[in-house]
Length: 247
Image (tube, rainbow, N blue to C red; front, side, top):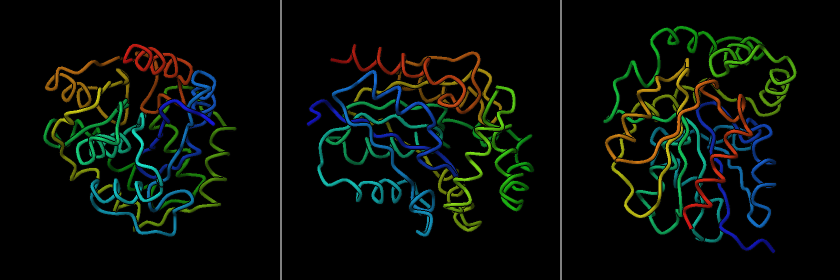
């Protein structure tokens, strides 16, 4: 029976738990006494037949429904997942021990053009209406700074074929993300991680929240938006350092 505080991993827009790639296994190796629980947002992954909520608050409650015990958890979350993590900690402070937010944003701290770089608007809409192969290749080019990896993209295509996301849910998730604003959670330690060379969301969007809250922030200078994809071991090392020093 694993005794230490469990980790809950939450992905972002249009992604499901398998998009964490190698990272959960690395995290399990670093924390062998902790459960690592990857969740799906309604409308994605195993929950693809559900309707995606149009508010982050509702996403929190839907994800919480999957948890039997109300034990405090360590949340690691990326992009819109970071919004869900922040909202979870704000709404249910006794349930979140620590929170690590990767490349996230909120409308009350950043402008629209920082939260989603203007050069990507057309590409994202086009991807939504394209076939799966085109869409996943396009998403890879938006979120990764590494050379195109056919093996990874083919994996993503197989996930999308198995659990397709509807166009309706695609836009409902976008709406929820753009409507999101946040007040600082009072009871858990928060670490922000951002990619200096994020081509999807401006580095300034994460930095703005961290600076306002006087919260620690770590910057990755190489990875794209999807740090778990581009630099999973680096991310695991940063998580280990933060969690170890929080006790």
